[in-house]
Every structure is written in structure tokens, then in C-alpha cells.
Length: 214
Length: 362
Image (cartoon, rainbow over all chains, first blue to last red; front, side, top):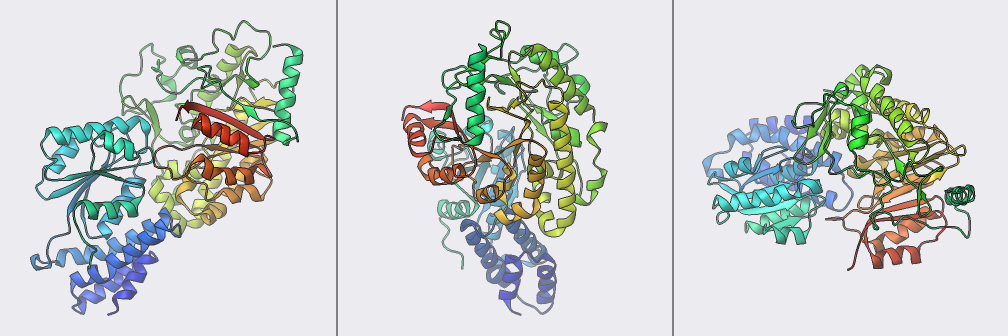
């Protein structure tokens, strides 16, 4: 079956078509990993490029991610040990006091689309909850999001809590959100910040030393 | 304020709206000089009707918990001491001192049915989405059924009494149809509805618009006119009714989507008032042309974003110039002294209002 067809379904947000294609492809013994590497990741990569270029906006990314997930839910249970682990486990959330989730969701979806395993803690997440999730030895990256200037101190507090739990040597911390900039990132000693979701994916790959996905 | 002083100020404000050649700009330096024209939103402990201070978070506020007079008296209002020492309306420079119903409460969202949830750790009060699906748009209550509207009217009445004509009373902070549909549905569901349920989404936007207009008119009907006109939250008087709307959520959708799904409703709001201002953010002006095509809104306001916004004041000057070719423009936000000078030097002065919130030295 033509993997490009599935990539296009993702690109155009056709979740019904993507699910149907995937079920049929798996029945015809298309390899699950081939579906991910040959269709879902390239499809979401193109979504990221179009978003960065201003051709796509949030709704288009959301429907694309929905299509990706409609396919992925059939593929993921069939992945074997031999297919290898994800390129990294990421813990992501909006910091305590902030209920905004769109930016965080966008980054979460694009990271998943790029092959990361994502644990999304949701919104209003306490420093303690981030620490608890980061204690899992597979966690390689923590992403902290906020939209409000009033909750920026909670980002700093969360970074300090990760420091205090002596977790920083094994993982990287990325921050993002409208009020965040490089100066703030340097002040709180985070490892990096990204201005948008595609940039966040690139930064995540760079921080974890992940090359271009094949 | 003397009658002559008042008359001159009103003339300047009318000239602003008319973009009269040789006039302007209106420059609001009050915030920079610590003489804010309006009560700030931050740092207020909220007294409740039962005599306690709001001290729990997470549980929704209800209208019966709020006594407008208690909040009015607790709110920091720089002009309070001056407000009873004058026979006429208070001004700072050439602008009117204004006050609005408590800005932390998301009034229209509450009237539509959103739970109103305080957060003490951030000093914010959120509205939570409540409509499980866009198809349920018809279940939204009419504004007259909401006790929050009764409270807003009581609040406006308390302001009218407290002011006694000394300061101007502006409309409460009202978000427009784009933001309101997102508030009642949740942002993700709103975005998906653009593709999955376009007709229902438009119907929901229409409901939100009707409520917005009802809320704005309910306030304006209580506020005494000043020489036949009213002041907006920026301290600018208009020779007729005035409304401010906003569409922050339009930042995350395309210009075409905004124009098809929400602009007709923002226009409907503006048509119901003589003068209108749409609030935008400098980081997200990709839909600016939509606002410049038609008569409505009659003015544009841009708040300068900080943080990760990619645009500097220099980048924005061409956009601002385009706005000023057809409409008055309010620019508000943090800026350096150089940026303020750049704005004032590069832009035509007629129809221009600039309000630095803070000025940085570098």
C-alpha cells in the first residue's frame, strides 16, 4: 500500500481515512514501523513545516494530529521490542496556576508526531508532579509551558525542584510560552526555549542529540 | 475642570475619531508617571459579601458572593482622593479618568454560563468551558436569565453613584465572539468545530454576539452621558455610544477562518454602537487587513507583546501606518524611550493614541 497516501491523509486531517487505511494496511501485513517512519512522521513533519511557514494554523495542526492518532492507535500495540524504543520520553505540562493548554498541546502533538514518547501531565501542574514524572528513568526531557507572566515564577520553581531532586544530570529542561524569552531561560538555567511548536521539536532533537529521523 | 478645558478636551477627542488633519496625537503618559487613568487589575484582595476575603481557590464564585460596593472601595484607584474635589470630570493630561466594573471577573463568559474560578496563587479569575459540544449552542441561556447580569448592573449602578460625574465609567472588559466561543467550548473543540461543525460554530458565535451586545447595552443604559457621548477604557471620549471588542483567539486561526466565522459577528457588535474599537496583539496581526476593509470597527487598538513576540516597534510601523490611512489607532504597551520617539516620529499624528505602560531606558 502507498505510504504517501496515509501521509497525505495526515496532512489534510482526514482521520476517518487514516484509520481505515491503517486497518487495511495492517491486515495486508504492512509493517507497523514502516507506517510510522514512512507515513506518520513525514506527514507530521510537513504539517510542522506548513505551520512554521504560516500556511497552517492551529486548527489544521489539530486535525492532522487527530488523523495521526487515529492511525497510531492501531499501530502502536503491534510495535515489537525489535522495532526499538521511541527516540526519547518527554514529560510536558503547563505549570501550576496556568490553565492554558493550546501551546502545550501543540508541542505535545508535534513531539509525538516526530517519534517521541510523550507523557502529557496537562495544565496547572505542580513542581512536585513534574519531579515525580521526571523520576522515571526513561525520561530524557521535561517541557514547561506557560502563557501568563504571573506564572513565569512557577517555571523557575519547577526547574529548581528538578535540581533539588538531582534529576538535571539525566535530563534536559525546555521552556516555552508567549512571555518566555532567552533572557528568562538563561536566568532560570533551563536548557533551552522555543518560540513555536516546530522550533520546539527541533530543539528537543538537538538537546537529546537525535539526528534527523529516517 | 473648567468648561473651556472640558470643551477643548472633547474637541481633541472628536478630532481623534475624525482623524482631523493637524491634530493629535493623544499621548497617555499616566501609567509611566504613576498616575494611572484606571484601577489596575493586579494586587487586589477580593472582599466577599459575607465580610471575609476570598481565600479559597478552585471552587467557582457565584454572584451572591460579591458585593460591588465592597470591591469598589477595596480596589486601588489612584484618582479616588481627587474624585470628590472637583465639579467636573477628572482628566489626566488630555484624557478622562475612567473606571469599569471589576476587570478580574470574566463578565460575559459568566453570563453565558461559564463557571467563574478564582486562582489565588496567580491573582486571576478564570472562566471554565462548560458546553460539552458545539451542537448544544441552543441550550445557552439568554443573558436576562443570568444573575451575573444582575450583578453587573448593580456594579455599574454603584460606579455611577460613586463617581458622581467625577470620573467616567467605561464598559467592563468584554471579549468578542472569537474568544467567547473558545471560552464556552474550550479552545481545542472550537478549533475542531471549524472543520467538523462549521454551521453550529457560527450559530454559537451568534449566540455569544447577542449576549455581548446585551451586556454592553445594559451597562451603557445606566451610565450618564457626557455631552452626549461616552468614554472608552483608554480614557478617550466619543461623541456617541462606544464599544470595545477583542479577538485574541483569532491569533491561532487563519485570516480567512476569522473572516468567515467571526468577523461578521464582531461587525454586528460594532454596528450596534456609534464608535468601536477592536483590541489586537502585536505578535498576531496576520488578520489586520480584515479590519481595514470595511467601516467597522471604527478604530483599532494594538497591545505591544513582549517575550517571544517576533516583532519590534520598527517592524510594526508599516502596519500601523496602514491602519492610520483609514482608522484611528490606539497603541499601548511597554516600550523604550527610543521606541516611543520612533512611533511618534514615523506615524501620522492624526488619529493616533499612544499609551506607554512602562518606559525602559534601553
